[in-house]
Length: 288
Image (cartoon, rainbow, N blue to C red; front, side, top):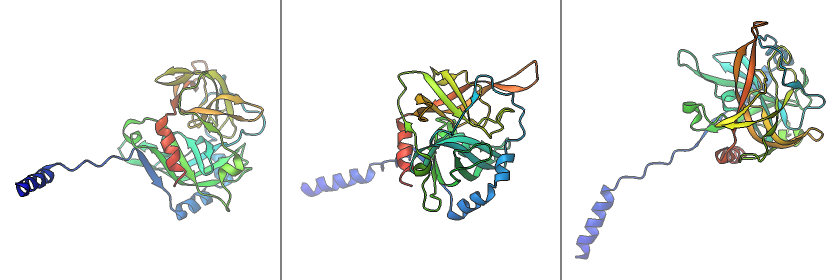
């Protein structure tokens, strides 16, 4: 009898379907040391200044130029899209070797012919100000986004891992900012970014002091032009110390045309909420 039971159990086990593998919720893209060296060589001071010099965007009226030293951890993230143009976003150091930005800055999507666009020559210049890189540049070693982003364009959050430069880490040199993965208690928000408007040309840091409204994503009347993508949204920001708590990053803007001038401008900005899943992104990024 026991032999028959054993045979039946063995048969049942053999017929049971194998458990499906658990999908990794994080997508990791890495750059080789050769890629990193090429990126640093590519972004000469002349290239950095030239990348934003052509603009059709009206000067901001809500956002104002930042006065004084760039707040800790904030900088300009340069990218070459292949195929595509040279471009940039805004990013912020949030760990010793990790900066926070928008996913679309490092995963640009597809061309109109459905060709994938690659992000190459990815470097971060903390404290960037009108052509000056006071803390040097750091090449991207890897970036991490949510596995859903390539299909759904959401959530628009990325962690970019930077390679140390001459033994120095970006977080040690530039400082880091705090993150919150839950909605803030106050919607009073400071938004920072390097907009590509005629007023900024990507060369100057701008700020908005606005009230954010939760509408799926966060929504504000901030009018920073493109290039401000990935910029931090702070609650409790102290302009004197340059410190606050980031709860969102700039994702996209609603565009309109100024009928009096024919210029385009950003009517409002949307920000992606940071969530517990983004905490996982950061934890994974710190281990790369």
